[in-house]
Image (cartoon, rainbow, N blue to C red; front, side, top):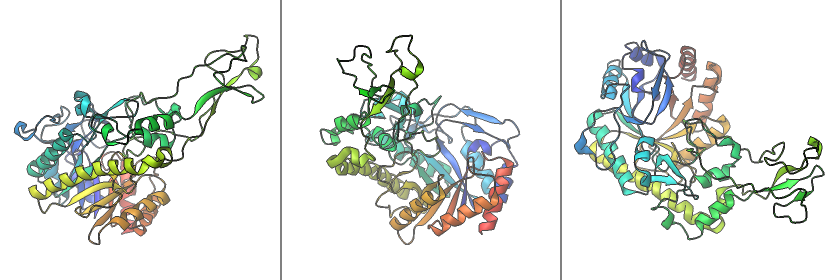
Length: 452
């Protein structure tokens, strides 16, 4: 099965959309029922070309009695029943319609309820990230699944962000790449220390995480590469530069948050051309000015950073996602027993974001979908690992990017599809049929035909 991902506003108000999707060569559409804020191109719509979606919204009518503390917002940029309108139009041309459901990624609810969001080891909140360690968050997700199944009556349910969000997040004017945090730092900054999570960890976990993130300390080096520490009392001409260690102060997310831009995290910090506070006489030339250097050794992985704490911390994180996932599957099976359930999943136990950690598989789901937006070889390895965790009856999906930086080249795209199929993918989930230009959409259709 091939599944094209789509927003309700791509269909509502555009009578040509259903036929265009039917001609693409897919059997189903993943239609967003609950989705986060975004700024989306609409290259086909007769009424607009760009749509600003300022907050996460629910694209079905809100029934107040169906919710408790957390209630999703209603959109103002589409009709309140936009999902239903789009669903009916797509089904009229013979397409299945699956409900694409984003769960814990919700800046509207997180900003309104800061006690329920992920907080890193420094106490910084991530307002876009609802923490599934809170019962209110789990209940909200349960209500969301039940409402979608009852009101939308989809042909399938697709669960995204079915676990904790992390550090990597494309937000307004993202300003985090210059901190030069490594991949291990990103994983550590994704660990939640909210009031419910912090007591679960071993006592020294917070201090260990903070120390690991700040392991690299600034020193000063002369042109001859002689290091002078920041506490030196024997070099009055150089003085002391008090440079605070980097901390997470931006509304950012985890580097694995698919659908968002991955922060740049080179492993070696860059060296500025000169210190922010001059420490040599003004007559000195650039070649004689002391320069900031970085000393210290960063751990290669979160496991290295946590040491003997890693196993327990990892088990706690995986259990949180498993609890949320199993409770939602229970609600889904009770509400609509025959509706297939698709999980956006990652076999990496440290994963956060759109593709939740699934290191031991989930036999109660029907389809497991892995992200395939990066290097095809790495993507194929991830797919193969997910395939090894699946039951014989489960299908494996490849979440394939049809947008930049992928080329609009049908041969290249078809070759990638073949790579993913060899790794175990039995269906392709195509992102994104509403955002892709006509040229890209045509290339995708040709690639599907070449692969068939």
